[in-house]
Each structure stands twice: as C-alpha cells, then as structure tokens.
Length: 438
Image 1 (cartoon, rainbow, N blue to C red):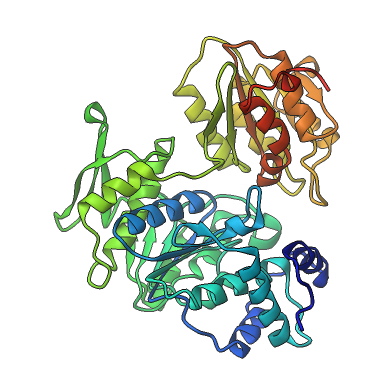
Image 2: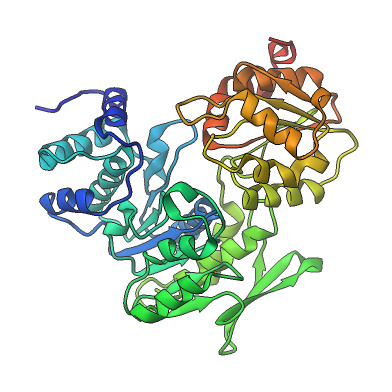
C-alpha cells in the first residue's frame, strides 16, 4: 500500500526524509534506480547543465522537437508555481496521480536508503519517461553535473550553457572547479556542445581526456548576426550551417547563444532524429518559458525574471537597457542567503530608482537586513529602499508607488516569483486592491 494518497503529502514528507536538503552523490539514487530496473527513459537523451540558460535551452529544444512531430519528455527544476511543472510529456505537465504512483514505486524500491527531495523527483521523472514511449528525454541538471542525480543517465548529447560562480558551497569557489563539476555529464564518444564562449580549461580538458567530441562556440561553430533582417545564422567550421534563422521568442541577445546550443545539439542526432528548417523556425518563434524577462502587465510595466546570480542579473540589466522607458524602474527583490547578494545587485544598481525588498521565504531565505546590507554596499541610499514583510506586500507597495509610465522588475529567485503569485494575479486582472498599500 502506498505511503500517501495525495501529492502534497508526498512532497511534504520528502522535504523531511533526508537529513540534508542537498547532498550531491550518485550512489544512493543509482542503487534505487537499479532496483527499479534502470529502464531507458527515451530513445534519445539530451542532458543540459550550466549556471544560466539551462531552462531556456531546454525550452527551445522541446519547442523545435515538438514542431518536428517528436514525442518529448522534459524534466526541469525548480518549479515556479506547481511541482508538476517539473515533468512534462508531449507538452503537458504530468498528473498528480502519475507522480504519486512513481513516488510509491520509488519508496518501495529504496528500502532503507534515504533520498533527498530532488533525488525523489529525478527518479520519478525517469520512471515516468520510461513508461511514456518517448522519442527524446530532455534532462536539466539541478546543480553541478558530476554528482547530480540526473547524471545517472548517459546522455546521447550533453549541453553546457554557461559557467559562473553559483552554488559555491557545493561546487567550489572558482570557475575551474565549477567547470569540472559540469563536465561530469560528458560521456566517451558522445558529443558535448559548449555554449560558454570562454569555458574553463578544466571543462575542455575533461572532455578531451574521456574522448567526448567537443562542439565549442567560437571554434567548431560560430554565430553571425543579421540585425537589419532580425535574422541570425550558425556557421560550422566545415562551411555548413543554418542561414536566416528567426530570433527566438525569448528576450535577450544571449538567447541566440542558447538557441545555437540547442540547434547544434540536435544536429548531432540528425542521423536518427532528423529535423527540418521549418520545425527549427517554428520552435524558435513559438517557444515560451515563464519567468524569463516575462512581461505580465502594462501601465505600469511589470516584468518578472528568475535571475538569481551575477551572470543572470547582468543579462537582466542588458535587457532593461535595451528597452528604455519614459518613467522610472522599480525593483521588487528577494533572494536566498547562500547567494552572493552584492554581486547579484551590483549590475542593476544604476538602473533602479527604488528597491522594494522582502525575504522570499523558506529556510534558505535572506533576511531584510541582509538584503539591505547588500544594497547599501553597492551605493543604494537608505531612502531608496523599502522593506516589506513578504514578497506580495513588496509588490503591492511597488505598484502603489508607480506611475503608468514606470516599470517594475520582479526578480531574485524562483521562490520570490512563486511567493508573489497572488499579487501578480491582482495586477494582471487590474484589481485596484493591488494598487493600495498593505
């Protein structure tokens, strides 16, 4: 008999099962996966690692493959609003019943082995995919790569997007150390696509040492812009490539680098997974991904973005500068305490007229005092910082202070975006209650 009947009960129990919320190892989940029979999750597997850009790259891979008629499973983390977002089959989030069934099977197989919340979810995704008769499984690494539970599966193609300092307590405090961890998803005789224009030497050396053919941006392939036509192209070093590609629907110049990584990865599977130019174009133009410079409302303009490290907030700042407005820009900001808060806010400091801050919630949340300290360290005056008890209140305060010509940017973590869902709904629906101070 299953331990629980409802998804919420399973998730609450999983959060408390293992003594450490994060414990990077393959040994425990690998043993349970073998007990489950270790079925192949799909005919083809693409695994994506990186500091930023993983979700966008997977979204574009999924959109192009779906446009080509393939049956695709997608596993990503964390979720924004609903745990079921993490696992989708053929474009649809998995049902709660399917998750509960997978959790029950994993619970029965694990015996006395303790699993983390993330490991339970990863094994569930693999089990659900194995039963779904997929053409392709797209797997997003949760943290690092080498010891992440996703790395139980040998990828036909590995993709590494960018490498920067994040999760340093677990991955190391240098790009070289982090690059080595992410290189762990590479496999012998299976290509790795690297979209970081300046990858750490450790990543390149590991790929070479294990015999994983490298497809490195700037070497085996390059990007060329055609801004007048809003087109771009990929050129391979052998003279082939893709011409007149449409801009991806996701905002930001960096998204073309993510798109290139996705296309180059699919080209590596072209012999058994062919995709024509129409499917590529349709996928790029129709891709959607919540929380990536996502415009939610106008007058005032409300944008949310999951940017939660310096590399991501630098890209966010570039997006804001590329779209100037007549009014002011306000930030609604909260982050986790294990982040480099000063590095995170510094790129945005010159662009923000006022900061509305709040702890996003949860055990890892930064306090208002920590958030304030980071802002003061980069030169934000005290009178330009307003503290709220919670993210919804911070967003309401910002909306109340904004004129129609102003812009609000909500960012800092997935948790922050999830915590503001109620206030965002009010703003999007035009409810005047959202415009009154709490």
